[in-house]
Image (cartoon, rainbow, N blue to C red; front, side):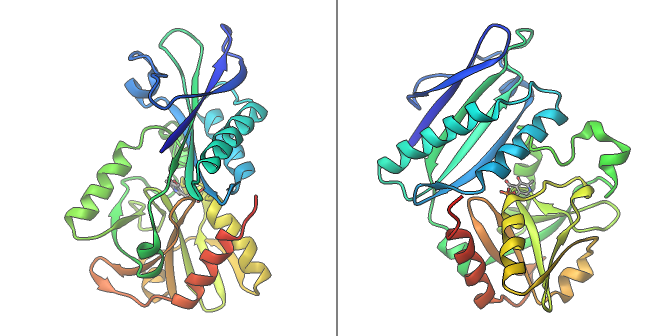
Length: 290
Ligand code: PLP
């Protein structure tokens, strides 16, 4: 099941509101720069029992990604209302677990008017990934860890529509008999997954790679750090290497929709899963009401 809201723009490209539409009604022209160039940004938030989780953090990152691409600044109130309308409609149709994707493209080439929509869909069941865990391969991302400073035009750390590389990496993982990917910088630092952030437990500390390495600042990881601090864990943003992953007490890939998936093997080598803490982390995410 899918629900769509279309963001309305005037001729000057200023957002004026949104309206719920039918998912089967076309929203895009074939010359829109979103599909033709991947020139746009998006966010995906989770919907759990009627609550859009971490909505403000997703909206803030949406605004930041748009700024990195020099797109018109999204009108947060209009987007928030559209997301809530889609969430309410999905929930009223009995969806208890879903995802809400919001997309802003540069629009039809030469028009100066962006295109925007919000798409809500029911989520698949992630119980197996959340409990049994996932097999991960380390793949070279091909950029040094300082790429945001040396080559900002590569847009590392923006959530752009250009995810073909991320999808290709996931196919490479499947070819290697794995479920997911953890990218490593060309100079050997752990980064993120194609759609997830990395979390490690080192004793009583939970750590994640620093966000200045050209990775997304994860909304899920941020909420997990807030919970972890209240549960007595220290937290930190660090420069981490594959050796840190090898020696970590536990590792997870975390993201808005799949939530917390424990890493049960890396490049074919089995690693321990902390089932108890995984359960607590997923429960903390499920319990969020905003
Ligand atoms: N890193 C990348 C590249 C992603 O695409 C995502 C989410 O899709 C994440 C990290 C995790 O971000 P969040 O927890 O906000 O979903």
